[in-house]
Length: 133
Length: 324
Ligand SMILES: Nc1ncnc2c1ncn2[C@@H]1O[C@H](COP(=O)(O)OP(=O)(O)OP(=O)(O)O)[C@@H](O)[C@H]1O
Ligand SMILES: [Mg+2]
Image 1 (tube, protein in one colour):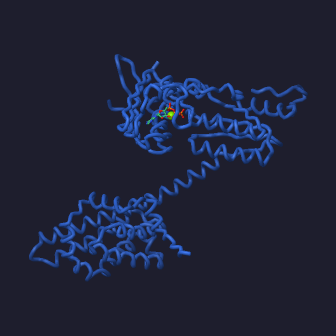
Image 2 (cartoon, chains in turn orange, purple; image 1 turned 180 degrees about the vertical axis):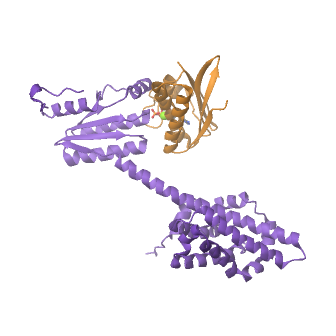
């Protein structure tokens, strides 16, 4: 696929950058304004987790196609400390960072598909997709 | 008491640019500098040292010969300083030591170029002239072994490209510093707290909120509440495109802190999109006093303060101004 953007994530401004790139790609793919905002929010959550917990990583944005429908896929990946208990991390309100603990479960609700893979000491990868309605 | 050793501006810049022994080592590797090259450079050392003044002149003559170079050469004092630096640069170029100190010395000229506004492409062209004349001198010095001379010159060229790398990075870094400062300034400017009337503050939030800005907003709002003994704050987020959980959390904490200081907060202008995202995220907005638009929020605030908004239009005499 050609329409792919890799945004390096290391600091706060990179989160904003990933969000804006995501909005632009989503608009180009035909997503309406509401969905663009939902996507931008989901991107913000996973990118922020990279900054908060892994230090650095990347967010890859890509328009995808499957059986005639179009969508936007977001992959956030890092080589940070990883998550010990993935199930726990997906629970509403669970946070090791004294925050709301809504980022991961919230992003899942914002998107159509969501997968979290993490290996302690190796890194974390979130893969999520939203389809055009 | 120990003496305070003041950092020079180039030292500060070197630190900000993270010009460490390690990163300089990386730079040497990037231009492909090998022990072999050091030996070759040592071999042409005397040729360069013999004509340092001449080579420096080639550089500055080129600059004074073209329009774009005169931003520097028209400034007598700075040109003198630059010439001095260029001479020590040439001496160091064949000195054999290309560590952190060497890289740091390159910064002073870079800063000077930046200060007078000498464009990088002009500096690079002048530097190329200088290298060409060094190349000619090197070739002339051993006419019987042109291949050797060429190889030695190419070894020196690695140092030249190492230098260009440092200088380009420094000039770009300085230029970005201006942008960073402007961003900070814009941030400060874009979190104004306006006193609308006694005890009523308006906090219009425009643009992108990151956690840094969210903190600034909290800060300036709490200060303003104290200074104005405000009772009601209207926080207008009409201009905000995205709010994620962390920023939402910050804003909610701001609202709580304001309450503790005796001011209630009315949030206006939450777009349908943002509201929908916040709900999907699972953020509980029920504790917030939200009102659709700014006008409605201001009316509500004034009612809360005991003001009655009256229309000036005689036909609607006494009737409260309804929004819209
Ligand atoms: N990339 C990551 N690397 C390591 N740990 C992570 C990563 N992302 C999330 N986590 C862990 O998962 C927990 C839950 O993440 P989630 O984003 O849901 O909540 P939060 O970041 O703590 O709070 P919020 O996102 O609501 O501000 C985090 O507290 C952290 O311990
Ligand atoms: Mg999070």
